[in-house]
Structure formats: C-alpha cells, structure tokens
Amino acid sequence: MHTAKKRLTALIIVAGALLTEAAAFSQTAHAQTTYCWINSATGEAVPSSALVPVGAKQNPLNPNQASRPTAPARAGTGFPAVEGADYVRVPCPSTTQTSWTGPFGGAQFVLSISHVFTNEFSAATGVQTNHFSDSGNGFGGGINGGFNWMPWGGSIVTGVVFDANGLSDKVNHTFPGGTFIGSTVNFEGSADVRAGVLVTPSTLLYGQTGVSVSDQRLQINFGGPITDTTQWTAGYNLGGGAEWKLPATALPWGRSTSLFVSYDHTWWNKASLGMPAASPFFNYTWLRQSDAVMAGLRIYFGAPAATVSPGIMVVKAPPSK
Image 1 (cartoon, rainbow, N blue to C red):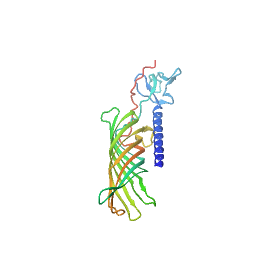
Image 2: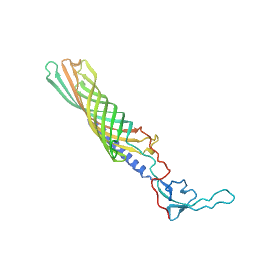
Image 3: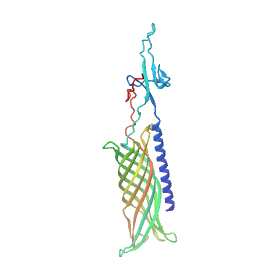
Image 4: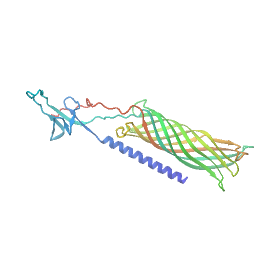
C-alpha cells in the first residue's frame, strides 16, 4: 500500500506538472501578438515588405504609422499615377479558432488503488466463517473517446466519455506458507456522462459519472487444488477532472488537442464463487472499491481550426493624421 501511495503521489505530481506546463505554454502562445498593417482610410489589410507596407515610409516619431506619397504618372512609361495612402499598424485578428465541441479520441496512463473485502461462508449453513480486508494497486494505460456539446453556448460543456484500460490491479490476502486468496482486475472500461464549466477559454473543469465493467480474475490457492477463473463485474463511478487545451497553431497535426487529468471512485458489484475446487465446502465473495487517477491527451476530430480571412480587418483604425 505504501508503494501504491508513492505511485499515486508521483502520478499526481507528473499530471500537475504537465497541466501547469500546458497552461503556461498556452498563455505564452496567446501572448505572442502579431501585428498587421492596414489602410487607415479603409481598414483593409495591405501587403508589407520587411517592417512597412510596400512603397511606404515609417513615421520616425511613431513606428505604428507609415505613409506612401503620391507618385505622379511617368511620361512615356505607361505607369499611371499612384495615389498616396496612410497606414497604421494594429494587432492582427486571431487566425485560428478552437472549439470544445465534437468528437475526440486519445490515450492515457492510469493508476488504480483498490480495497477488497473477501468473505467466506459455509456452503451448508450460510454462516460467515472468514472475513479479510486487503488493498493493492495496478498501473497501466488505455484509450479514450467521446463527444462534447455546448448546448447553451457560453461556458458550459457537456459530453460523453468512453475509456478502456489494461492494468494489473492485484489484491491478495496471503497466508503463512505462501497460500492466498485474491482478485486481480486486468481490464476495465467505463462509459460516463460529464458536465463542466470553462473557467478560461482553454481550461475546462468537469464532473462525471457513469457505469464501469471489469474483467476480474479470482484465485484461491490453499495448498491443494487451485481455483483460477475470471468474471465480468459491473460497477458505477463518480469523479471529475480538468482539461487544458493546447494552441492548435502550435501542434504539427493541426488539430485541437488537450491534456487532462481525472479522478474516479468506483463501487464494484460483488464477484462470487460457490464451492470452488480449491475449497468445495465454502462459498466466497469479493467486494471491491477502486480509486483511479488518469492522465493523458485528447485530440478533437471536428473541423480543423478555421482560418480568418486576412481581407478586411474587424477593426478600423482612425486616420494617421
């Protein structure tokens, strides 16, 4: 159990560090403002050469202003007169837009810490003859997918999330001489509904609940015949998490991507064996509860980040003079 706590602490620290770095990276990326030159009379974006629009000279007293003088027609060359213009430099509009809606998929690491109550009953009388309480843990990974909606607009996000994980969450009660009775979850999956709020445009805090299923290996070894079988066990879970969007423009695959960390507590239904070969005069039940921490990423597969047309700017600066 001490080792499990160390693993859980380490995973939480790593997940926290990843989310902190993601937040810092996101803020830095959004803080890097780019600037564009626009025609001060029309608000239209203009091509620029080096630091100023083509043919213009920057105002030495104000680097955010530039002017292009009127150029008269050149006799015999066929070049017409070019009207002068004034320009101002303003922050460029955002070139990408990310959304929390649509389908997504990803992968994660998971650490599960479980507590199992094992009970033994006389098959003849039903009287409880033994009770054990033990803890264990397992580490693994898996995949996730789902779909998000923003039905009311604003900052509320709802959705469904599915995940499947392979792990070896073993809980044994060991007797002198090395005999034991125990259970191991090698696979677990869940289907959750979730709802959350965007505390910033790139940070989602959410709660979730749903149903789970696990493939539970049940083993009894009392020194004679060995019972080793598996059962599918259902359960329900409750938890929450945080998800941090990375800037779409900073990622090579050009899709909206997030890092997440989540916690779930799962109450599993009883697994049971009646008069197993390892102990044919008794019945056994295993009642498990699990705490799981997951950390991973999600890639959103909706429309790619939309590009804003660089034609007419959404702002119109006043004339430079």
